[in-house]
Image (cartoon, rainbow, N blue to C red; front, top):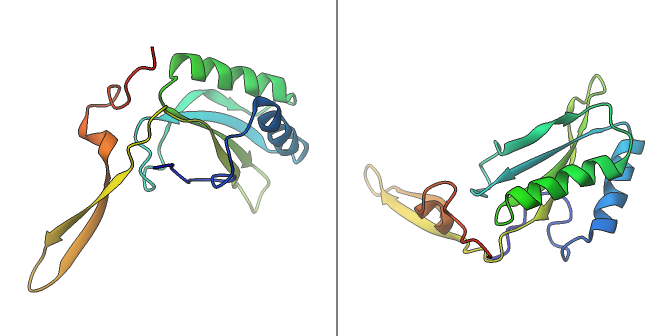
Length: 142
């Protein structure tokens, strides 16, 4: 199951050249870029681990792509995304976020049902990957 979160999530994987074009766009708009990674892609998991610090003063896409590639090397079987943050007063929010790396196999989610008081049914989604401990959720491609 392909995880579809963020901008461009329904498109085929972006090449590094296409990623650079998106980063260039974000930098031209004055947005700051950051790189994050996780092995728990649940849609409500908004707290991915940061790779380094946000690049507030960076104005060259090559610098951001260098950090993306370093993160890919360290975590080849994790989800990695690039975020573009707009710090303009009144916005101060993420303007763009897109996945730039995925594990070789994406096992997907299951729907869990729980009985509640009376005849109420409560549903939740759980990733199959989270059955394993953090750091061991996706097998190494080596």
